[in-house]
Length: 264
Ligand SMILES: *[C@@H]1O[C@H](CO)[C@@H](O)[C@H](O)[C@H]1NC(C)=O
Ligand SMILES: *[C@@H]1O[C@H](CO)[C@@H](O)[C@H](O)[C@H]1NC(C)=O
Image 1: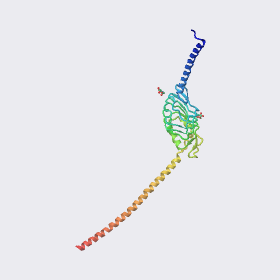
Image 2: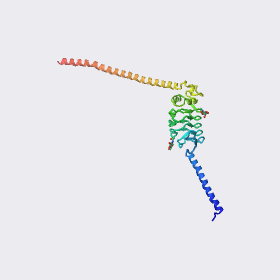
Image 3: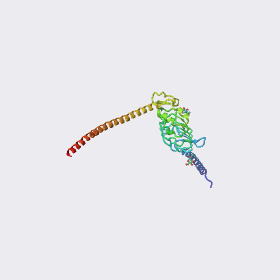
Image 4: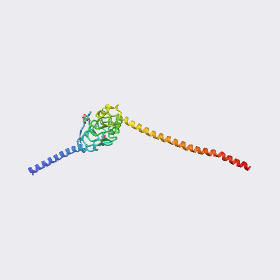
């Protein structure tokens, strides 16, 4: 018996359905693969091999933890990051470029970029809220960092921190433009901190520590002197008493001897 045209059509459509189903599954799987790169970010092949991971403008409050270990470029710009925690990028040994610009970053924890010393070449920290620099965050990093568009507070701490960033590409430090300073009249506001490197912001601090040292030393000195004076006076009295006692002794002895002589 020949199958009815309707049956045949049904069969055909079932096959079609199966094909369609497979297709859907396949595209889903491709989606699975890209989604497994990171739940919240978009991934693509990077020209150097590995992946470019885009997480820009997603209002992320934290650095995603599920980034693929072959990430070469990571774009986290235009999010709501407030800090970069210790070891935030530890599992990404191939990372070349890291864009953290246009966030709310106010601080970088020590060892924030640990594990990137060998690979990282570009680090964008521009347009954030960084006022101070934690040199321990950059330990070992040799990248070129963009530090512009941050409200840098130029003071002795920043000056000391800059001296510790010797591994970082020196161009990076040209982006440090002072917005506020301590002392306020240091004349460094609105200019790159490097161009006024001869303005020693640690001088006033040195002065105050010098004064503190002087006061402490004077305090100690006066304590020692007063103790000496007390000691000498006390001993003088003792010595006088002793002397008096000694003076009184021979007379007693002579008295004794005289009584003895009278007895004899
Ligand atoms: C990434 O992880 C996979 C599986 O855990 C591992 O085989 C591979 O070597 C890692 N790649 C890198 C660059 O570390
Ligand atoms: C640094 O960042 C600023 C602002 O995001 C940008 O305009 C500038 O071109 C960047 N500089 C470099 C050297 O990449």
